[in-house]
Image 1: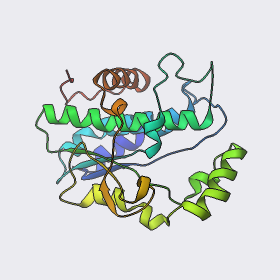
Image 2: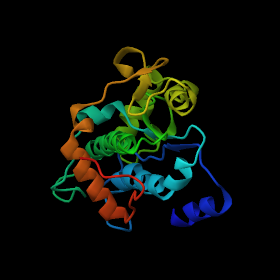
Image 3: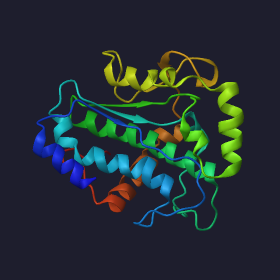
Length: 231
């Protein structure tokens, strides 16, 4: 990642849009080479680090935006500060939900820090609803492959192109607001055209924001030095 960010700085003067959309879902308990739970590492820490490493290019961008993809599942999650790797108790989907809450908190806290510096960079959250991608079918826990991929996808999921609508709206529409969650506007935010979504109380809690930001800095070694700390 640092090598990629270095090439971006060497070859480009600005970045207009960064969409943080990498993700894994519901694998057996696995640790990254750095010792972090792999869903938290992939779905959150990687996004945090890449955004920080590209921050100067984003601040120089034309109508710049960071779009971080979360999930409606973030509303079901709590941050396991006492057991961040799941050593004492691991649930594949529970830790997926945790990573999606971390995405939501990161997007909200980044917005708050950008606003404190009067930065033109927008931090916008988006989620695709229930979309028929290979995220469900490639989940390596068999029960979730069956429930989400074989059963859920045919019955409930919308096509991939429609699932991309919220992210595209967040990345391109002039009315997309920093700090906003863009979600499908249909029932339960599962499908539909882009509309304002609902963030959980945990996603905007100042203490959660501070603690997760500090943990992420320590885990990645990346500091957002251009932004004044919140609070």
